[in-house]
Image 1: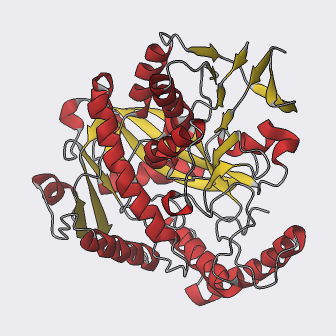
Image 2 (image 1 turned 90 degrees about the vertical axis):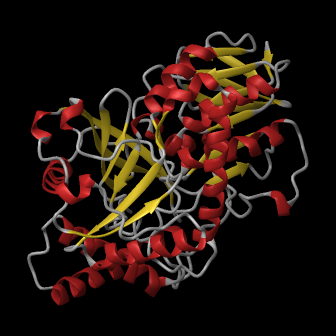
Length: 458
């Protein structure tokens, strides 16, 4: 049998693609490569906030990336609402309607700047910003609260519930064949592709959607040799089971800080059945790391107990680890290969893949249907997977951003034991050395701005 399409990767993009394409193209034969445990899946481990405005960083990068992110995210939020309305079986997955961003009086300079940028974007997008928003919960729980922003309609979904429903539903699809294995190799044979699975089974297909996070280059092999490097953004969080009487947060609301030192900050996301998600630490790695760092767990626990959950010790917790894919230049990798228009790649979406997934799948649907998409309608233009890396403004800007983020992280984790001036000098020297190594390794211009989260990884 020759399949019309093989979807490799069962995170949110892969699963949403399988659901929507199998429904829209009922006469097409689809193979879905979907290992049953979703180990390390960023989507499964996620909270999952449909964050757009609450995730902005303060960095005033001179390209249009942040504005593009926000415009795409706002469209995606509406698409998520439409998806749930059109598929009532998924109605239960939405667990939060709004987001509250809070700023403490002892916040770092970077965190305050992020808060200011959030307020700016909330205001210009008419999202009912309210910096003095306080409920009875906040009056009782947060004595050190400086400011808050209420962002209406920026809620959350329970991804574990989504996958539970999806996995049950997709088994009954007559035009979908599920393979609970991994793909070891992809090779071109005449006009089609041959996929070799871990069991040595072979699948022949006309088209491929490849959405396996940071594993994409390994999966695609030589066919994707020009795709830039992709790293594992290791996220650590807790799932917390607690009695209803112990929960002191507003119902159906995400409560979170601005971003803190290149990470998502601390956030609390309601899930189903008195369960909520507490996260998230983050660091970039060349390889997947399945064991959480003790310092991250300690920080999440102590911060939560100090800032919100006075009875946190009574909760039953489970550690969640997920790998957010991050490209070398920090921008998404979305689109077909240059010389192979029948292979569609999705990776490097970092914290935004789950939010964007509904819009990405719309684009994939047009590609699968061989529709001509003009540049003016291509929201992912410039993010093609085989493009040259995009500079993070320039060398000096990127190094200064690295220093600000690293310093904020050291202060937040109480590791800044020297005076700030001395730490800045040490970080500057460190960054200059790392920058030279990366420029040499990747043969980049001397003034190329290496993304601050990548700078100390390579």
